[in-house]
Image 1 (tube, each protein chain N blue to C red):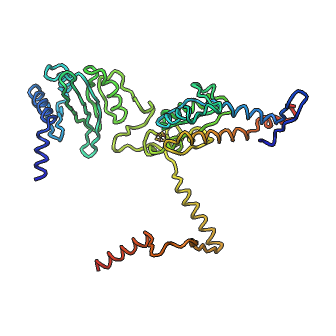
Image 2: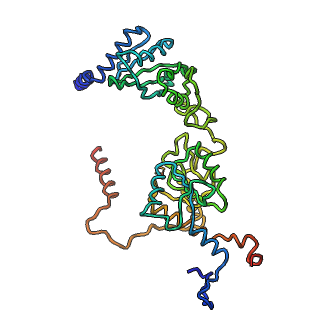
Image 3: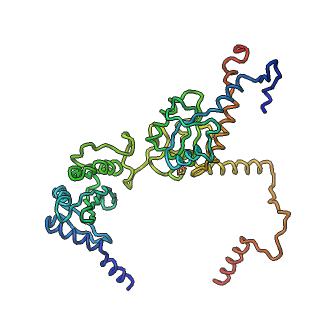
Length: 170
Length: 231
Ligand code: SF4
């Protein structure tokens, strides 16, 4: 349990006292909506991750078909230059705060297509990446791990503090 | 001997015979304009480009051919001969036979009339060949790039294609992470040398079983033996 939180016995039941940031982050990490964005064979494994075995639905993660409702972009597969421009556009359309997972060797560095003329050598050449998941393709377990690291990252955010600290919001 | 047998077997191959038959039919109609190349799978080369549209239409409409399906239009770059080939694979569903037709174009200006009017599917195929090899199909209704972005420079399947430094500001190279590791090792070694630290390789406290020879040592012994044998 996070030491920032404490349970207090109130008159009508238990009261949880926490930091505002913790509450916001906890909400956020419990409903990561990711942009459905499969580009190649990794996309199949991404679908498996949403399937009943790995089931990232249990983290409250559901695929969205529009960037405007997405918090997380999972770039799953080989990114061509032609698609890279679109990926940038989609990323720009996502509302802040937004996160990016680069899934698989191809998205991370071009993978086995690195010497191809048409393949972008890594999605980090166009958008900032938070988590790299290695593999070709990464197993659903690996992607789930990456997902949990994104959650860790979300829990470390301090948006309320940055917005003027507790004094103003209290 | 073996080569002869191989050749015999090849000559008996029904697809080979069929291709030769089909070419003979074409030659009967177009004479000098077409030529047979007797490769493993024989194909027809249309030498007279003015006749090319007529040849293709004949393939589709003649009752002996009835090539109702254009399987693919591809291209091959031969920089040494300074030509680019445009290759057409055609197939007849009705008569269940296939044929390959090629035209050889000068590399500097590879132009050939489109076959879009004969097989509408040629539209996309020809766009692909144009995109990747720069073959210009005259009379094509919409000759744009099909797979690469419209503002791409060059035709990547040409043998002398050189990749651009960047595409719209996206760099086209990526440093190998191994290089970084090598640099790191070198830096560490340098720091050690400066401090005068001597690294002693650690010995494992576990002793190998009696009489065991490591593969590395074995290899060394084998090499030595071989050297002795030579001497
Ligand atoms: S990393 Fe492997 S599995 Fe993933 S898109 Fe590339 S080739 Fe396909």
